[in-house]
Image 1: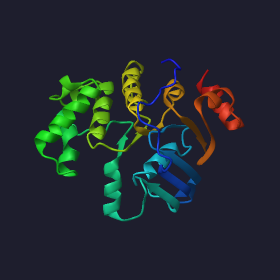
Image 2 (image 1 turned 90 degrees about the vertical axis):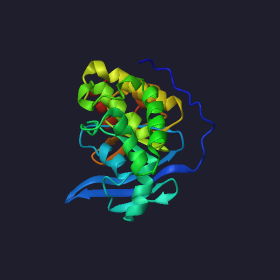
Image 3 (image 1 turned 135 degrees about the horizontal axis):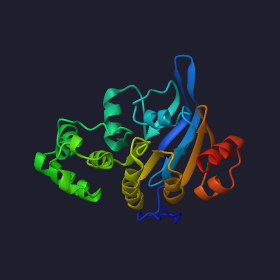
Image 4 (image 1 turned 135 degrees about the vertical axis):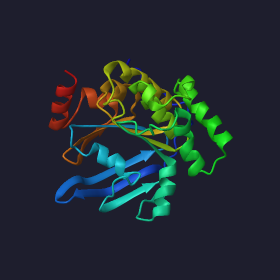
Amino acid sequence: MNDKRIQSEQPERASEPVIQMQGVHKWYGQFHVLKDINLNVTQGERIVLCGPSGSGKSTTIRCLNRLEEHQQGRIVINGEELTNDLKQIEAIRSEVGMVFQHFNLFPHLTVLQNCTLAPMWVRKMPRRQAEEIAMHYLERVRIPEQAGKFPGQLSGGQQQRVAIARALCMKPKIMLFDEPTSALDPEMVKEVLDTMVGLAESGMTMLCVTHEMGFARTVADRVIFMDKGEIVEEADPETFFTQPNNERTKLFLSQILH
């Protein structure tokens, strides 16, 4: 993947953040997993979170759709503060798509059924409309011919592209990616990254936890380095990769880039 910076096709971004994390803390029992996380993301911005295992990257993005509950601080999504209100959580989740490391497709449903389930149940969309939208996004991720197959009949890369299409079928305002390529064989990584690059080009607001530094260089507006539950450093890709300030960042990059 080359290092040419991607230019969004969308108009200039709104200044009001679509994601705000203010003084966010989270504990698992006595373990302080997130420590005073402060992060604003504007519409159309593309953020890559990186760092060593156990640094809090995945927990950070899982807090944004309440898959994990924070105990202190504020999280605001599209102007709505995330609370314990179940209806509000459901409403926010309908606007925030998520793609996981291990696909999480329903094995007993076809690709098309996987993609239409949420629009029909959550959005109350008629089946025909849901199927039209599903086929649109399956074409977008370049696997419309797989619509009638079951997940077990697909490669890992194809399954992950189905997972991306399924998330897009809800027409989310924000997409979260939690190490979407880490469970894939190396030869399948590029097809998934290419799909994500296409999303970035369309102006989708994206937060991606990944170790794919080529993707970070090419796609990200900002790269955020986390370690031990803290945001240690954040910068544009050029600065991050060529002039990191923090010693922990320098050590991480020396290990992952060589």
